[in-house]
Image (cartoon, rainbow, N blue to C red; front, side, top):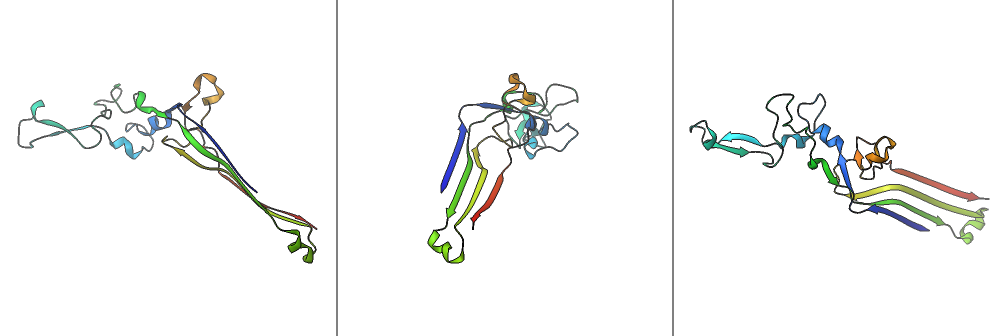
Amino acid sequence: DLSINLTGSVGNEVVNWGRRELENPRGNNNILKSALDYAQLALIDPNGPDDYRNIQIVGGDPYACRMAIAKGTDDSNYRFSDRFVEDGSFLRIQSISFGYTFPRKWLAPIGIQNLKLYCNLQNVYTFTKYKGMDPEIGSANQDALLTGFDNYRYPSPRIYTFGLNLTF
């Protein structure tokens, strides 16, 4: 026996609130490496004038949000924007079930009527470009108005089940 079940979704968007929190360099927690991809200013010619004509953007992503100049301002990586809205499309191998029933002619000489080995794998793999843990998030706090809002939701567990059916 072999059974493979797939599930998926196309076109949904997910607010990755966890990424917003973990890319805030002014927070009190660990941050993601991607928080370092902010635009930085540097002098074009270190020996040249120290004004706007001698400044260039270097390092990181030149289109990323810039760091806040002062704490408490709105110009920071923490500011909410559509950069935290991600494509939540996915295709998941939801389950794979495999079973093998041994032929009775092999079992009869040792006094066994039936022998079946089986395994069931759940949440095997998810194909997605979503940067969070699981694009299939449902709603936050069971609130229908917060559908597609990922606030550190625990991902679906991967489960492996193995078994043996034996009849004497």
